[in-house]
Length: 178
Image (cartoon, rainbow, N blue to C red; front, side):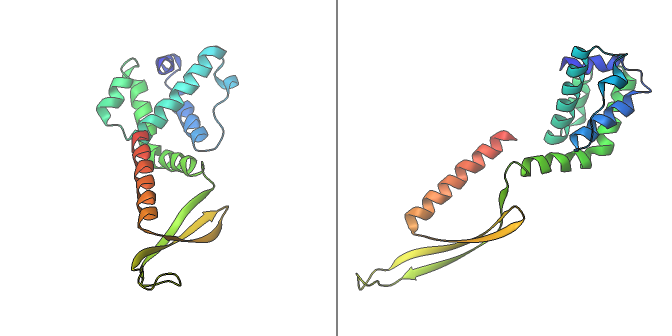
């Protein structure tokens, strides 16, 4: 993250304001403007500083990095700049985390709010007098665009196993993204 090194060109008095504006942008408000910092960086450097600072803050808060990792990433900066960056991130960590979670949740307009299940044993049918087949009734409450839609599914043993395998595969993908 070469752009973080360029932060050292920013006077220490302007650094907290810049960092808080970057955090504001991450949280859905306005980012800092090039006009306010054009005397410090040219346009190419500005874009690099802004992108690298955003990426650094998101990574640090999203991965909940320990202090040693922060120090390693910031070792090219003065101790004053490092202190300002760490203070800003620590002070606004809950707000940044909430914004990142909202962004992740906002990727899908539908999500599972609640579920319920019942196990039934079908003893017979109109075709067979003795069937004894287990069935699972799965009731899902899906929220889409702030409207709850109930969905009921009846699964036999094989279909239930396929659903469980699919959910386990999805869980593995989510764990790899962390």
